[in-house]
Length: 312
Ligand code: ASP
Image (cartoon, rainbow, N blue to C red; front, side, top):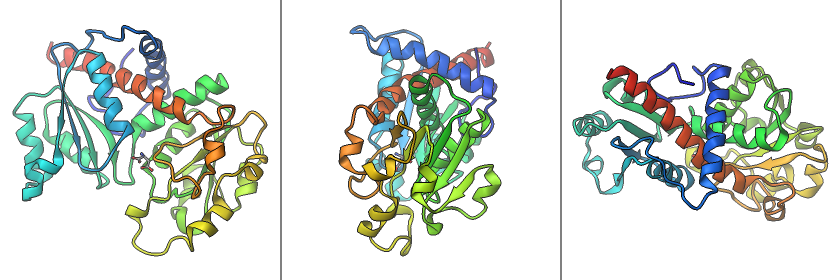
């Protein structure tokens, strides 16, 4: 079981077999994480540095827990208090950290491509924890594990990804992963929030929420990412909820056993009705968070095996 690459920068370069191998290993960590004694020595002696240049709750906390449960020395760099605020460039910061010999560097950055650039400059394994609107590979992997557990398969499913697709790295990584695993992916949202050329990604596109949800096995909702919008992409939140917010009436168009997902953070009453988000018979949102820790443990475990190979 291994990954071909030294880094995990995106879903794009992964082969279906690598995705399945990572999810299979993550399953083992799901079991471990449900036991009172969760500690392993898999990453013992290795140093993991988390550098988050953009806010995060779930991703940062789960990468930290994942590293600690596997025995790594984990450091969270406080970007707010660092020299980044004094104008230091990303590369200078990365080179300074590189000189401290980390083995795993987990990076989130607001600019698409910034994490790839950084990976070219450092000697350790780099994990992309989200770069701009480009990729968020561990999110797509944890979503895949959640879907596989709920649906007992990860192929030939109809998956509706709804809302602010244009600004979403979660959508992009999911489109790539679900496409590789031969699923039918539908993008649903207002024309202003669907990226130009989306149909070329091998997906269906609709601006009608009810048509988009018809017969879906999985309904994946996305947050309106206002921090990436520089103008009026939607008329008002009320109007948006009316047309694109997930409520019981719209969800009734999906299959009776359809699951509801959201990567978080959620804006209740904007893209999703709070009652649906909390409905334990439909919503797997908390399970997504649980899978996040296991998937990140598996990703770091696999990359660490490659480090051993490189250093002999
Ligand atoms: N947490 C996800 C991300 O970092 C989704 C979101 O922010 O809406 O991309």
